[in-house]
Length: 348
Length: 280
Image (cartoon, rainbow over all chains, first blue to last red; front, side):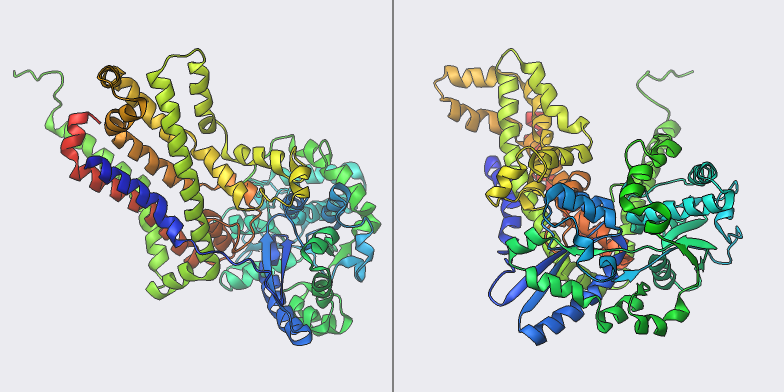
């Protein structure tokens, strides 16, 4: 009898979950398409709206139902996942290099992917700003204030996060301008990273560290992420500080041709990305605090974005390929200034 | 002067120690657990229900239960076989086998996940072979199951080995000498002897299988509504500033773990006589 009780308990444990498992929908039934969008960290809210709007439009125009599967994480990490076999139909990442690597390693999209869509395949731009606590208690006005002793700076890890690489390059640009040389820039970023207590792997993790866990005095953040934190986490808890100099971030999008072909989604994937450039798409983009490309939409929302002198990756850093090799590859500048001690903050 | 025996503490010391133990448990275990439930239910029961029945949450719950339902029985079968082999038989590489069983305990879960990416990822050893045949392992359910099996691998075996070592082989030898077959011996002699240890191992393995984060995170691909288990879904919600929903799902995960614990306690209580007699 005891054995029976035991067996009953065991089989209950095992079978109960099985019984509750439904068949799971395949999602490719007639007249519907499914897209896997592998994106970077802060775009969760943006693509939720974009997906809804595009699905409505596509249904109206083509009579086909389209649903979306979303995956978010640090841009570099997401790129790595696609290389390792995550079958994204489209990638919407934090910077061009992360898509270059996918093209190079998997050959699933051509090397010239960035020329296929308007504006360098970046339907919107953004930049890097500072988020500080209410009242700006440490009086942080510009990059120079970040290296003062006692100021804690929160930024994610440039090895895994796209936003963090933009942060790093903006900081480098400031250091070079202020000190007049690359040596001065290196001194500046070394001091800056000495003030960083924790490196999260993605931008959203860094925001949570700063805003929820209350660590640090200033967050180096995507402009959209800073606005979002300010709005979502209680108005009046944080303030945005626009530095004197920052960088023009162009987060690009691309269809991963081979994956889309395999899933039979090439047409809808292409239309999905083109939708981002339409006035409707651009309005959604502006609503989520990304800077629209469309001149009219941009003019309409110009008031909300601070005017900042912006460096560009191509003019000031010789493009992503060169910047990645010099600053972020193994043995690059970032490794030398962080002294190999990686202070990671969780598996995000 | 009355001398106490060395085994007796004064009353004050006894109660102090008990008090410290309870205080510690309250601070380290009950307070955080209470916070989870408090935060989960702060928005009301309706909010809680909405969070755990929303479609991504439902799929995360289903996936978590499915993964546990595959990983736990497999590890029960393996754990029984391994413990049987190690404690009832003598062979040359016993210490090596013991060490190997412990491997998942000593390896970081993140590494456990990466192993499978290196093996089955598109750039991995078997990646192109699998891709040619359209078999998905990484960033799909099979990868999550594999990673979970890896991290829960030792629980059952580790629970049984000391118990079976202590019990020795004499019962089995007696059964065999009386003419029982190997299978009969296992079914009528060994299994009744070890059932409480086995149950305990199953509960531990199950709790870990449902709660595993690191290894699963590496192989999941984080596709919402598809490859997010409950722990991963909780992280997603938390990162989206959706704290009420994050805590709601977290409380459900905690309840699942608590249910298995309560189940174990009930069984132990109902069969306390048998347990005392068997000595575990």
